Length: 321
Image 1 (cartoon, rainbow, N blue to C red):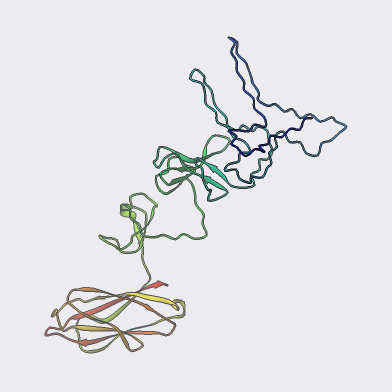
Image 2: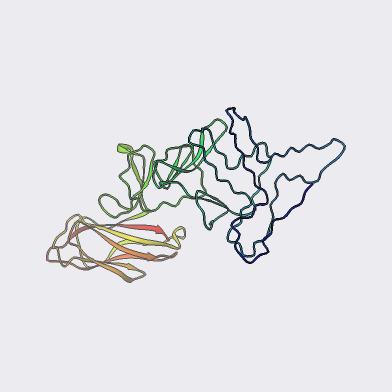
């Protein structure tokens, strides 16, 4: 056993202090099979026991030092050499313990227990790959911010090859192209074109929309002239829609009549929410109105033009808040 410490008690500058330094060279024409800087072989007698065995132990307290390294490896093959450089190679260890954060691919301050920085920002490099014992990929995290589950070439931000089970799915505005794949669930954000803020399932002729809840009402019979006053149509909010909202009201007529003068008022509890002048065969009135059990919606024709509109069909669109 040998105990030795290196100390700098002077007031000057010391380039380096080495507790242990070893340089290995092979200047002969022969090949050295294995060279060890340090080699530890733990063998315990069957009749004795060692509570704790440590091959390499580093401890210390930095008072003024800028950097401390428990272990520092900087390896490079000689130009004529070949093979693999291992900074750390651990074999047959049941456990490996890191008390603090681990940085991979970067230096500085880690943001988590495991902080990984990729080598690029394109689909050509990966930040992380996880395989099973059969070398089949489980998780692939690519540097273009796409991740694959059971897939090593993800085509979207999250690309899953297999079934997905989730407690909830929150689908937001969809900015990609239209639905082209069978079985694809897609959200249309209502911003342009045929997008109408609903979900579609499937593709092609078999695509169908999952529409919002709509309450249909016939306010004025088909081809019947408008007359002023409250129409026969009404809707009383049932318990199951308590706390919901009326998002929109759609108004449709069989004949437009004069493009001015024909007006209808949308009411809740006898109080006007909006008034629409009929100038086309259909109108959409945005309300975003909170509703409660027992609220009554009615439709009052407040004016008729030189030529009265005919027929009035109403749809009340609901949404959960």
